[in-house]
Length: 248
Length: 248
Ligand code: SF4
Ligand code: SF4
Ligand code: FES
Ligand code: FES
Image 1 (cartoon, protein in one colour):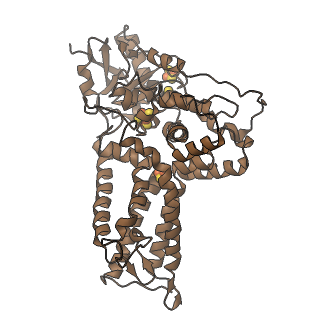
Image 2 (cartoon, protein in one colour; image 1 turned 30 degrees about the horizontal axis):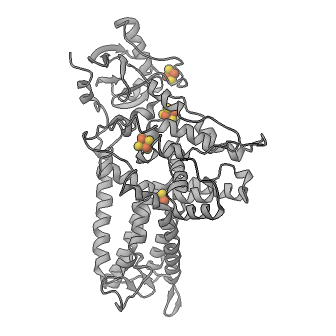
Image 3 (cartoon, protein in one colour; image 1 turned 60 degrees about the horizontal axis):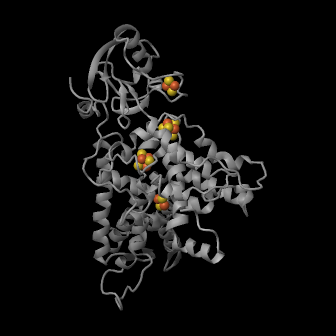
């Protein structure tokens, strides 16, 4: 059995550095197994958040060799054994300790989104063709890897003005719901700042659930925002029909 | 011990070099931009027999009655605007030319004001659907040119140029049909297909366009090279550098 070197961030938001650990590699081992090995044999105080070890709870997110990933879904044999493997906490969230970050900002954003509200007098019957799209969005495990990698949050610190890809996925699931009666395009344009997204697709690249975040959620939502706010022809049609303007 | 901030410098350790993604885009788009500009200004060698270069279609004021410059310049805005505001190309050039971001999880230069697509001029990207409407007209002309490419002085025939023009317009059609705005217009904007007029048909069309949309990046590139090569072929034939091979 060969050994791998892990360079793991140890420390807090104020102070910290990577520390090297040697870990024996076993067949089928994932990065989270290696972290557990470190925890049980070398550094019992290593802080790691995890829960299911099955890619379903979304707790074990970190940056492995510079790429945001679920550590429980990242096999050790995908990395060259002769080079150290660097494991850092998610950059966009404040470190609590070691690999554990404070992701509570996300829950605040979530509260801004009005939940599902059925249309008045709606008949509770749905056809598969109406919910195909929404089902993709329901796969989200809230690992926040997409939020972490998004440059709007990661490099431009727009936490106040921007909701981030995970919440565009949530809004897409509500906006495209066949029975929902609310319109959230105003929210998208203002509070969630969808215009700050420049559709560069990093969120899609890292999503462990393979949700096509940019193509299926963000771009369709951007098109809906254009419908309601930036399309002069549709604006005119709305005026002629005397339709109610979307909530600002 | 270094501070937590310092370890950020080592963040890209083990990541594939980010410029590997950026350089081909810079070269591809750059080469096309230079070639297309030269050809658009050239104002010559755009026609031979039944062939018309796609850069010059529709051909307007070819005898310079009202417009003293190259006729390509009169129509260039349509296809150029369509490509520039295309969701795929936006991603490509934001990454490659603006480094916003250069690649995923690669730190951008800090200290720059970032406004995404919320302010002038980038807010104009929202006009993409209007270029789509314009593109319908261009596609009609290009199909007309492709059919005409088979009608020689002595009647129906097939030259290499006929096939080149047909291949070009087919690739452009795939690019056009895979457009995000078209997908939205055809059905994506509906919340409930089964409740809408002609909902089933729109769902079917939307699914087909969705399947094409997954390959939008591929179609964007091959149609870009296709249109360049088609123009180059017409130029070669028209300038007498080569002779068109008549196959039938
Ligand atoms: S596509 Fe938009 S939301 Fe996704 S990572 Fe890029 S900027 Fe962020
Ligand atoms: S959309 Fe994907 S990357 Fe983002 S939180 Fe959900 S599962 Fe994670
Ligand atoms: S531990 Fe649950 S997703 Fe990794
Ligand atoms: S999104 Fe690329 S052409 Fe419309």
